[in-house]
Image (tube, rainbow, N blue to C red):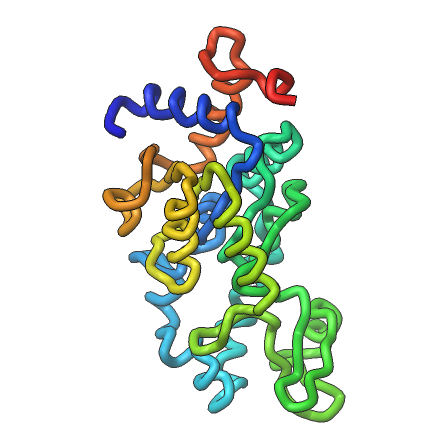
Length: 261
């Protein structure tokens, strides 16, 4: 659907207000305004750290001390980040009864910090560290304070419980995400490049099962012209509050949440 951004926002608000089975899929772009650099792009993490050297499970197994140089910097950034208006907007949509869940490719915990209760962490969480020698698990903060790289009691270097390139998606997260995609009526795609499998298949699964796809991204993605029904071009922290305001506006054609319950 083409049109001005205001027209697209009104149309998206009407779809969301009529929903109740809406699911959000979020990527790195939603957290950029919280001070967390995206992995791709001119200011991305991969401009500084070659993913082949720092982000594959093979690289970690070969040289975990080197990979922890990148992980330590990433964790410092995450610790200093706070939810932005986009994270808070999704939490508000959930409170309004208009958003069922968030599937996130991010490992920053900002959706939970903003108040979202149903968050599927597709790529894991750095809140825990796991030993790939004996599989013991530890709270990250406690072990990182002991020194970098953090070590297990068995002596092996610990790995954050996040998905490196070359590792499978946690089965429970993938199963939950696919179930949400198959059963939602609307999928909000926010801040993702839609280039990393298998997360990039979630919008296609939703579309194949009859969902409408609303994309909020500054640029077009591989989804925009093939899967997306409404593409609102811009930053999520600006657009999501506008959608909520449109839903709540008495002059809007959108229904209020109370009319759907």
